[in-house]
Length: 84
Image (tube, rainbow, N blue to C red; front, side, top):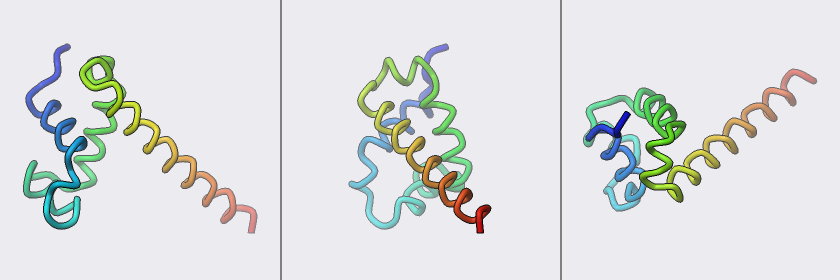
């Protein structure tokens, strides 16, 4: 399935988001009219597609790595909390 215009916009935004004024969450709301939680949910699905990887491999791999590292930190925090 080819990438949609919104998919391409998400990838472009992630590649350039530091150029936006203000906080990233504010830019997400202004650019896409989405809550940050919904945006990240959709982005997470997008970066798992082969089409996104083919479109911009470096960006998609970086986003996957960042997501996986955040998940690992979260699991580590939960592990520390559960062992107390």
